[in-house]
Picture 1 (cartoon, rainbow, N blue to C red):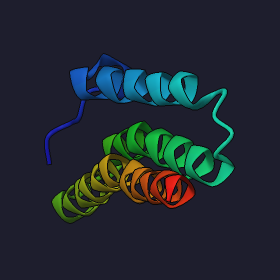
Picture 2: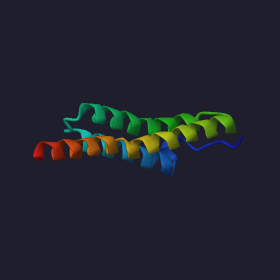
Picture 3: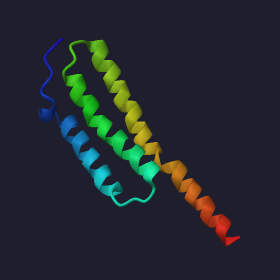
Length: 96
Protein backbone atom coordinates (compact mmCIF):
# COMPACT_ATOMS: atom_id res chain seq x y z
CA UNK A 1 0.00 0.00 0.00
CA UNK A 2 1.40 3.40 -0.90
CA UNK A 3 2.01 5.89 1.87
CA UNK A 4 -0.83 8.28 2.55
CA UNK A 5 -0.04 11.96 3.12
CA UNK A 6 -0.51 13.35 6.61
CA UNK A 7 -4.11 14.26 7.31
CA UNK A 8 -3.31 17.95 7.65
CA UNK A 9 -1.87 18.04 4.10
CA UNK A 10 -4.89 16.50 2.38
CA UNK A 11 -7.49 18.79 0.84
CA UNK A 12 -10.23 16.45 2.07
CA UNK A 13 -8.82 16.75 5.59
CA UNK A 14 -8.82 20.53 5.40
CA UNK A 15 -12.38 20.60 4.06
CA UNK A 16 -13.53 18.10 6.69
CA UNK A 17 -12.11 20.27 9.47
CA UNK A 18 -13.71 23.38 7.99
CA UNK A 19 -17.06 21.58 7.76
CA UNK A 20 -16.82 20.62 11.44
CA UNK A 21 -15.98 24.20 12.42
CA UNK A 22 -18.81 25.60 10.28
CA UNK A 23 -21.38 23.21 11.77
CA UNK A 24 -20.20 23.83 15.34
CA UNK A 25 -20.30 27.62 14.86
CA UNK A 26 -23.66 27.44 13.07
CA UNK A 27 -25.23 25.32 15.80
CA UNK A 28 -23.60 27.15 18.73
CA UNK A 29 -26.68 29.11 19.82
CA UNK A 30 -29.26 26.51 18.86
CA UNK A 31 -31.78 25.71 21.57
CA UNK A 32 -32.59 22.41 19.87
CA UNK A 33 -30.08 20.51 21.99
CA UNK A 34 -30.72 17.08 20.50
CA UNK A 35 -30.17 18.32 16.96
CA UNK A 36 -27.20 20.45 18.01
CA UNK A 37 -25.53 17.47 19.70
CA UNK A 38 -26.20 15.09 16.81
CA UNK A 39 -24.98 17.48 14.12
CA UNK A 40 -21.85 18.64 15.93
CA UNK A 41 -20.78 15.10 16.86
CA UNK A 42 -21.44 13.87 13.33
CA UNK A 43 -19.57 16.80 11.77
CA UNK A 44 -16.57 16.22 14.05
CA UNK A 45 -16.54 12.50 13.22
CA UNK A 46 -15.97 13.22 9.51
CA UNK A 47 -12.46 14.71 9.78
CA UNK A 48 -11.69 12.31 12.64
CA UNK A 49 -12.38 9.33 10.37
CA UNK A 50 -10.26 10.89 7.61
CA UNK A 51 -7.39 11.33 10.08
CA UNK A 52 -7.78 7.73 11.23
CA UNK A 53 -7.80 6.32 7.69
CA UNK A 54 -4.48 8.08 7.06
CA UNK A 55 -2.92 5.91 9.76
CA UNK A 56 -4.35 2.62 8.49
CA UNK A 57 -2.15 0.22 6.56
CA UNK A 58 -4.57 -1.66 4.37
CA UNK A 59 -6.96 -0.98 1.53
CA UNK A 60 -9.87 -2.72 3.32
CA UNK A 61 -9.34 -0.41 6.30
CA UNK A 62 -9.30 2.63 4.01
CA UNK A 63 -12.48 1.48 2.31
CA UNK A 64 -14.25 0.84 5.62
CA UNK A 65 -13.42 4.27 7.06
CA UNK A 66 -14.36 6.03 3.85
CA UNK A 67 -17.72 4.26 4.00
CA UNK A 68 -18.13 5.48 7.58
CA UNK A 69 -17.57 8.99 6.31
CA UNK A 70 -20.10 8.58 3.56
CA UNK A 71 -22.61 7.49 6.18
CA UNK A 72 -21.72 10.37 8.50
CA UNK A 73 -22.10 12.88 5.68
CA UNK A 74 -25.52 11.45 4.81
CA UNK A 75 -26.52 11.64 8.47
CA UNK A 76 -25.35 15.26 8.69
CA UNK A 77 -27.36 16.21 5.60
CA UNK A 78 -30.48 14.42 6.84
CA UNK A 79 -30.42 15.38 10.54
CA UNK A 80 -32.21 18.74 10.23
CA UNK A 81 -35.07 17.37 8.10
CA UNK A 82 -37.21 15.64 10.78
CA UNK A 83 -36.79 18.65 13.07
CA UNK A 84 -37.88 21.03 10.29
CA UNK A 85 -40.95 18.90 9.58
CA UNK A 86 -41.84 18.76 13.28
CA UNK A 87 -41.49 22.54 13.65
CA UNK A 88 -43.68 23.08 10.57
CA UNK A 89 -46.33 20.70 11.94
CA UNK A 90 -46.29 22.37 15.35
CA UNK A 91 -46.62 25.79 13.73
CA UNK A 92 -49.55 24.61 11.57
CA UNK A 93 -51.25 22.95 14.56
CA UNK A 94 -50.99 26.14 16.61
CA UNK A 95 -52.65 28.23 13.89
CA UNK A 96 -55.68 25.93 13.62
